[in-house]
Length: 257
Image (tube, rainbow, N blue to C red):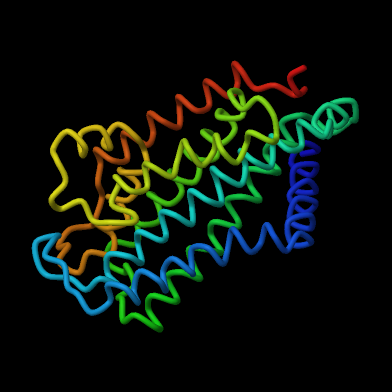
């Protein structure tokens, strides 16, 4: 019970720090919405033949931007935030206090998940109100399960990647290099209808591609089933286990000297 109370207090602290930093709020909230508007302005008049029929461009980019939002909130936010705290010595100092290490890390994870939930609500609402995209009502169980699993997976991977980031100066480059190229080959920024087979096979190794698949299925107007993409969920679960394993084994509380 005490650990839970301390974790909730840490979540409250992380939330206060986040909202007091306008730059962090801009990148986490404005960037996904900006991409949603830009892609719809550029390609909004075109239709796409996919998912068993013809869909609007908005029907592709709303779930795609949801993927970007969750990855940004859970992976990028955690990886960079933890790295900066480590280099500032904050992690080391906190370990000398009565606050358990698990409460500190869980506070950061829970806060990132809450931010991702808020982003999902905002982007979905924007798609419904401004781009005539139907809410994923028939596939809502699969939609929610995919979001929960993806949030956990990318939080774990965000903690894991900090073990290879040498310092705070290198954090933006390492984090973006590990995620941005995958966005282009994972049905997020552009649809991969005519991509080479080797490229899609390569993309299928990584969780972003599978997260995008689950989101596109959830918003697919031609989906007649419940929308569960079991293969994609399985791959994300494997990455969750891998991320947790690396984070537990190699996570560092002190900066490299």
